[in-house]
Image 1 (cartoon, rainbow, N blue to C red):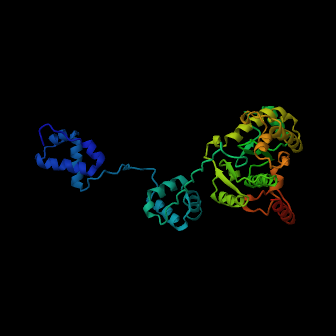
Image 2 (image 1 turned 90 degrees about the vertical axis):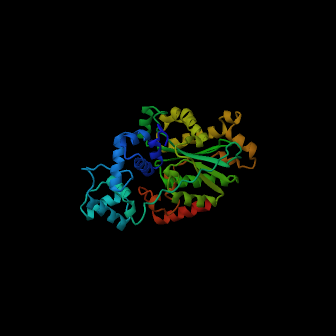
Image 3 (image 1 turned 180 degrees about the horizontal axis):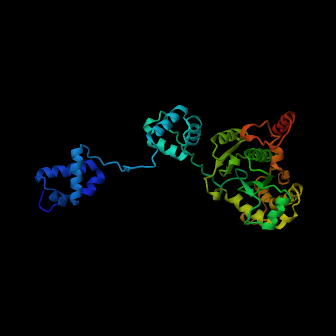
Amino acid sequence: MSPGARIDYKTLRQINPEAARKAVLEYLKTNGGNKAEAARVFGVNRTVVYDILEKAEEGDLRDRSKTPTRQPNKTPPEVEQKVIDARNKTRMGPQRLSIYLAKYHELQVPPGTIRHILRRNKEQLTQATPRRRKREKREFVDWYNAKPFEVVQIDLKYIRDRKALSKEQIIHLDKCGIPNYQWGALDVNSRFKLIAYSREKTWTNGLCFYLWVIAWLRSNGVTAKIVFTVDNGEEFGGKSWMKIRDLRKLISGFGCRLIQNHKGHPEENAHLERSHRTDDDEFYRLRAMRFHSEKHLLEEALHFIYYYNNVREHSSLNYSTPFAHLKQQEPDVNDNIRIFQPFILDDVSVKLGPWSGYNLLAQHHISRPNIFLAYDHATSIL
């Protein structure tokens, strides 16, 4: 090596710590063990050179563990082993393991601690922790070239929105027992809109709304292959891949498909989200104090949705009404499609079929024969 030459030890260490330390040891062999010179050549302090020599005496040039030598709060090894053994035996997650250990072993181990223990001892686990299912990529939806009812956006609106209604209006709705939720389905081409109401936000009501929208459109001459775009709300299937799978299988029989929007991206249902503002400005703000019962709400909603679809001119449609725009493109659509009665989903969904499990609305009690009669009637309509 030429006099005054330097070697960048830090760069060598970033590439391979063991190789960098070996280089220092080899250089010490060539200069007679002069530690000060080796430190100068490699651009480090002499303490680094002494540390490398100490590692060489220990027979291990790898980086030392950064774990503190004193850990007063660390879980005892015998407890960690019991957690690992219980995990291998039961294959439970941290939450259930914590309950299991408290019940059968009288050990109080928080779920967070169990999670850290399992993470530190992955090699001792007989079964690895299952990975989350990779979310499928959202299919591209072409709004601008879609024909009538080829793309239908579905969403849920909370009526008691504090940004839209005053405190007095919300109190009045509560006193009169007005439902909390408005369900909407809007065609992105014609802006034609269907609505219904519910007291609760449930998967059963969501399924009922899907089927009602399909039944209404198909019974009035809509033959297009419908693509429903929805958010990730649990009432529309949410994160449950089983619900989404079963729902897609069900609606495929009616020539429909389902596409879930990206989480946290309401702009992917922009047309329907914008219509919610119209609902507030031209309906709920003006008429909220007139609602004295569910019956009054449905009567007022019938007038408003008729006005929205058949009278109100939309600037996005070149100042045409949704129904007129629809008839201009699809003359064969039945004129009766524009006259529909909003209804309460809760009163219908429990009579649609013999539900059980997560579909059940337990607070509604009806006899079994009536369930099957209603189910036969609903399926005959569909």
